[in-house]
Image (cartoon, rainbow, N blue to C red; front, side):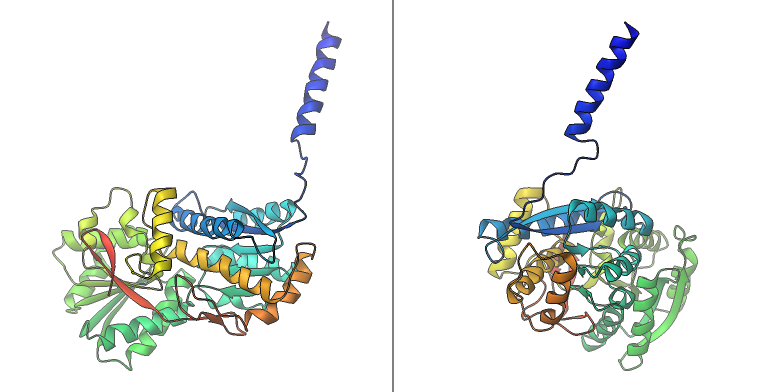
Length: 382
């Protein structure tokens, strides 16, 4: 009897393995395989989920319209929880799946790690939102977002040119390359503007729950604007603590601020009047933006942020490059990379985050920034 049971169990396991134990799905020879990586769980899930969804809308549109050079897109997005090691694991999972191009990763530190892997494999990589210049040190990686230095420079210029403040304090994360990179170029450009930086207050990943000291120094320096080149989670704490101490300056952030209205248990009324530099305003009235916002709300039940828009544009940038290179799905990832790298600097697209977007040989995007302000619980273009 025991022998019979063992035989039956072995048979069941064999059938299970045939249906999925390491068995790979047959690859679609008539499709380009685009992978994506980002956090869809964890602290930065708002970013990754938006990128996953925005790219999906672009993929669906392109496939419905006949594809790229007549070929469809297969799309697979993997969660990395914003962690570099998990991002590398996600990359290997996508390679096993058959990925030929990578749209990602979403956050900077994982993207720096994965960029070394794509360089070693000679695979084209377009990140929608990883903004450090370290991301594009290899010639196979291109950004849809502004670089950190550009965000700092353009934020200082916007504040100065629009006379938003006379005295500015900065609160930034010195342990994060995204935050410290923006802070450095903001301070450099501020010297050319009509306002004074009166306080530069740092925190680290180990001290990001109590900002009373930084806020008190900003208040004592009479800063009428506080620049926050940080992510939305810490920003929500800063706004809450500033309110508790009766400090009410203007707050101004960059793309990492996008998502603050979705922070759990945060009183969003405290974000009224907060400004941020962004390439996308969901209330814009052009046809492309209105269509995208309507589709996003219908599919996902919320208004898209700039990360969703950047991802949408990233997929269309891939499409433009593939068409320009007359690429076909039977090409290897390395052959596609060799074909796409030279054409990336020749294409131009009109996207959600910029008209006439183009790319330099460094991998940086060329487009104009916009600014939005939170009014009545929504992002409104300025």
